[in-house]
Structure formats: C-alpha cells, structure tokens
Image (cartoon, rainbow, N blue to C red; front, side):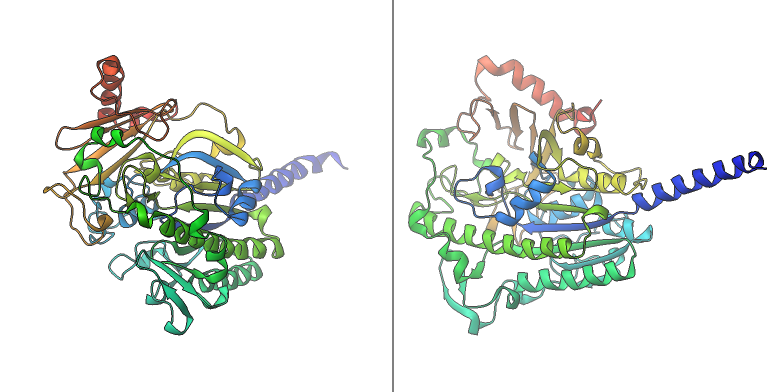
Length: 470
C-alpha cells in the first residue's frame, strides 16, 4: 500500500526543496550609503576614527580592503553603481548632468528589484540630490533629501567654522541624518510586519561638508588631537598639474586649517556612524539578519590635506577612489576581510546574484558573491576609474557646478601592486603601492619601470573586460 505513494512523496519533497530555495533567494536588502566617506574608520585601521557601529557591521560581515569607485564625485559615482555601468557608458562625468541624460530606459538597481516584486523604498540621498537627478521609476516610496541636510535650523546651531564645521545643540533624532535613520526604521518595521521582500536604501548626507554634528561628536575629535603623517615636499614636483585640484603652491586646504577640518570631518563620521547603529539595533530587534543582506558603502573617497593640500574629491589618488565597502549576508563569513579588488559597479550584479535573480545582460561589473564565501580566492586583476577636467585644465569646486567633457578624462588602472594614471595632456603617474602606499614617488618616467608602465598602459587600454575573474 505504501509503495505507490513513493513517487508522490518524492515529488512533494522536490517541491519543498524548490520552494525553500525560492524563499531563501528572496532576501531583503538594506543598502546604506554614506556621502564623501573615505576609509578613515576604525575597522580599516585608522588611529583617530571612532566608528563602533560600522565596526560591528564589519564584525558581522565581509569587509573589502580594496574596494574602489569608478568616478570620484557624487553624481557620476552614484549613477555608475546604481546603473551597473561605467561612466564612459553612462555619460555622466559631472554634478550638473541629469542621471538619465544618456541612459534613458536603463533599469537601475532599485528599479530592478521593484520589477521583480521587491518593495523598493528609499530615505535620503541615494541618487544625486535634485529633482533632475532623482529617479521615480526606481521607488515605491521616495523620501527625498531636503534643504535641512545642509542647513540645520538656526536654533540648533552653536557655532559654525569657516572650514565647514557646524556644531549643533540637538538630539540625534532631531537632525537630518537622525531622521533618515529613524524613518528607515519605520519602513523596516512595516516591511517586516507585511512579510514582503524589500530593498530599502538609506542615504546619509554625512560626512559630506558642511560637517554637521551635535556637540558630543566634536568633543570626540578636538583639533588639538589631530595628527597626520609627514610627506616629502619634493614629491609635489612629480605630480602632473591635471592630477591636482588646486594650483601648485596654492593648496585647497591650508596647513593652518587642517586640524580643524579633520576634527570636524571625523565628528561627522562618528555622528553618521551612530545613525548606522540605530539601523543595526533595529535589525537586531526585528530579527532580520537571517533574511537580509546589509551593504554599507560610500560613493567615493576624500582628501584631508594630503599631496600638498588636496581637499574634498575629484582626483585619481588612492585616498579619493578607494571606498569603504562592507557586506553582511546570510551565509557569508562573519568578521572576514577580503584583500581582493572590487569596484562599486560590481554591486548591482552581486545583489541580484545573492537574491537569486538574473541581472540585465548589459551590466559592466561582475558579481563578487564568491568572495563572501571564500575571501581569498583569485579575483579580478585590476580596477578602473576616470575623472573629468575642464579643457582649460584645473577642476574647480571639487567638481560641483561645472559641465565637463566626457572626452577629456583622466584614467587610472589599479592592480594589486600598481596604480597607473594617464591624463589627457599626455602626462602620467605610476606608483608602486607595495613600496609607496601613499603615492609619493611617481615612477612614470623612470626607465627602470618602463616595462611595467607599458604593461599597465596596455591593461588600461584593454579596459575592465580584460581584468574580470577567469
């Protein structure tokens, strides 16, 4: 009597497995994006940073030691990683060209999840700020950044500094980024109650200038405690003019102001970190970790006076194109560090892969899902980034407010050991990052490294397809 039932039992078991796989694939995504954040975090080894919450996320997931943006300024970088395409394809190389000027009907990352049945919601800055940059097709709910993000209520302000620090007398919950975190929690709670898979993007404005934070975060980072390593002044002679965002001899950040700027920047980081902690506490309380992928990233790096006085962004030095990237996902190793090369353009295919979805075929990154299980495995051989310059030469205002030429770009390739950069005026930079991680000795014209330069030049010409994992 039992024997005829075996095929049915087998079929039932198969269906259960398939349903279990489908359920497991429909993971949630919490995508946290910081603005203008470099890797000055405790979990990245920075001696002055106070970032306990980002650190605890790193302890839960995989921290990528060598993650890089594809363009070091807000609008081009965000358009790139949200479209899964590189700036040469997006056509966005400045902060004034609207997101879909070239991309038209491209399916953006949140839009992709929305089309596949995920609830897609965002709070704060994810795409670049401004109606012409925002992307209505991507969201079921879009809570946009307001003027408060850069202009807190006058009644809250204790003092402002000429270098961008704004000290507040306010509870975190009554600040812009505090509101972003708490509104995100409301959406998390609602999604958890309803049981529908969600893609929730939380975009913090900090530590972007103005460096706004309550007093207690400035107290953690007094200017008197700010220190930085010395750099040889002679190295400036080896830097091409187009590589800089200031006129040689006229630094964007004066030495006399550096400590104050650093203290304010780190205060803004610690304040943003506390808001990340609010989100992580909600993840704990709602017991979402076993069904949610959490990504923490920045849009690009940031300069704080290095290379003779660089400030803000818009360069192809390591400090500007390197970004923090942490991914905590069900089944991923906890507390792991991957040394492999990652690009932000890889995020789109990775999140699709983790959720069991087939991404669009025209993406220009690769899923790094395998690194979440085996962080040391062989991976891509190089990362690539570009940055624009006005044809007259010097970039102004850190790339804000200027229309730039997509055909007049600096281009860089970064391997495990080397960084090679070419500028449209024919100048170049070559750095041995093993021996010279702070990029002081430009070896581009050193005959001893002619072979290396030629090899990297070929790699730069071949582009990203030549560097994908074999």
